[in-house]
Image (cartoon, rainbow, N blue to C red; front, side, top):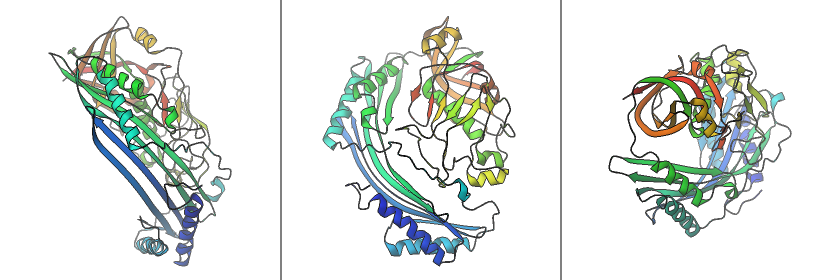
Length: 446
């Protein structure tokens, strides 16, 4: 389809991707794959009711990978003219001649290419002017500042919109592509009391602007999250239950996915090596991958290699049902690609019956984590240690905020120690998950 914001239509860039393959064949390549992409975006930031930044982006690019048997070369360009495409292919071919042979490289198997490419409703342009975006940003920030008189400053509100499309082709005769969009509103403010100064934020992102939370709601939540952190207290080193709120629980799932992804597995740098078919988590943990959710933030009918995606169960009752593989990592492991070249597709974590208040009651006394600092996971051993902030809970009730603490454990043990998953599901990316309660972790004061 054509889009007035672009100089080329989707059909035209599909033809470009095919032309690149022809150029590669002329150069003697035994196989090749190419992707052509176009995107435009606008971002407006306001701070203290004044416009701070207005940014536009307009990007285009072609990437080509060629194979001469088991030798591989890659090159890219932002010039879409025919001569530039030929020059880029020539550069990739030249690189391939100097690379070492790799028996595991090459296109994904032809039999796995997507044949029925369904429309997943991913393209919803937001025709918003700069002035309209400014007004939305100001309204969002004003809503946050209005929450409490102790909110004294702002890091601003941002309104962004982006749309684009791409086409991918390879030597198996596969060509596919589609348009997509992503929009967002965010706000971050600062609150101050006699004892402390704190900041927090909130945001919403969606394929369609109609599915975003309202500016007023985003601002209100940002303000409330900021104020509740004031006057934090220290706690003593202890071992207690830890509740990761939904916005952070997705990070636990991301760590799990990294540990069962091909790159870490074939490099033997994962704490979940040789875990297929084994109990790796609590029986409460069920994860389903669904690439076909309409308007899904990680939906796609095929992966980065043209392989058809499909719904599947990744974890069932805590037992690992499958890895996350591209064709290359699959060959290294003696397996078949799972259609995950480029990442996972809409991971849905089955929730329990408890809402956030119910999780607090089940926890009794412990820690709610609302912010994590640093990257403290050793992927090889599973050792986990992160700076954190959140709230101390007693008898199922939040007592006071806490900060300057470290939470520690081992990810393999943490996954098995999941005792509840809330139904307060938050969708802000490729994972849909509620808050996760871990039976016990070590909390240390800094």
